[in-house]
Length: 128
Image 1 (tube, rainbow, N blue to C red):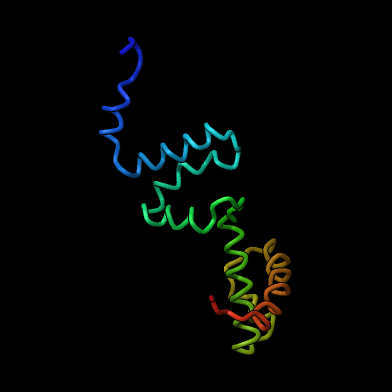
Image 2 (tube, one colour):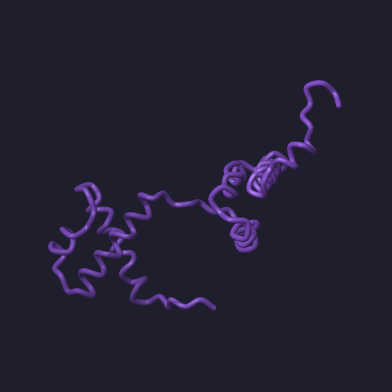
């Protein structure tokens, strides 16, 4: 083996399955040079092996954007607002006081509430 070259066989033997999946996903990015593949190698550290396979089976070939926790929190607050107003019959003023929010969030929560209200009333929540 030329000096300065790593022993790939020894390195692969030392890698666990998580590291191998991470390497495979990174190699895929290097092979395809698709910018959206850049962060995929980290998936193996947050998903178990079967979940990675399920993820690939379900989302293979798609481009997705993952929402932020802040986006998720906005929808949670809008859902809570819906529950307080539409299910528990609170006034809007009472309901908005119950939420985990700051003053800047109120407008965004109202907008999200307006979007999710018809979804909750009209969407059929069944899979298959």
